[in-house]
Length: 175
Image 1 (tube, rainbow, N blue to C red):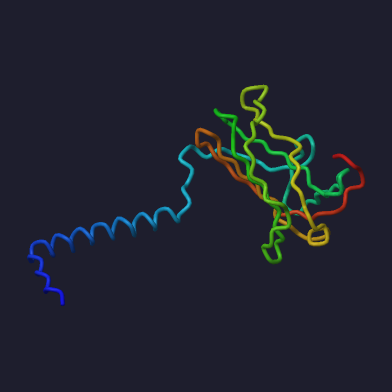
Image 2 (cartoon, one colour):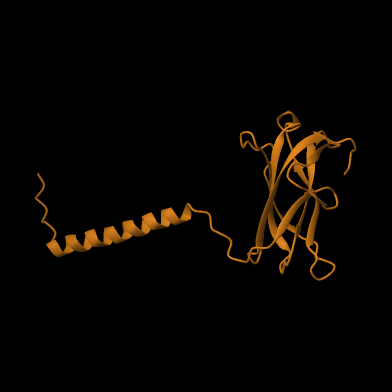
């Protein structure tokens, strides 16, 4: 039979409870904060999403063409322009979502790219001819979709834009 253990002094018990409480609070705060996405720290920049191998502006309600690729896939050509960038390297995200149910109809697109610098002061930097894949055309062609685009530069500059468009099959192989 074991000898009964001596009880801890009351001061030790209070210190343990206080330490455990502080540690628990820090853990809960840490878990809560890591679950939230961080907002970009740099300035917001004006950005516009368009289409084509060379930037073509889009308005809500426009029609965008879905192209058949040479290797069996299909894609939309997406182009972007952004003003007042001081850092051209950026993380770019693109997506197509059906407006009827919010389902994504494109392959996830998150790529580090570099905008082409503007040629004249006041003109936008460009990213042109990006291929956004649509794996199942039957879920997208003839439907209203939301073309979403966002970027965040290495220095925290960021921008986003979207257009509601309808997809149709392209008549040509290239835009």
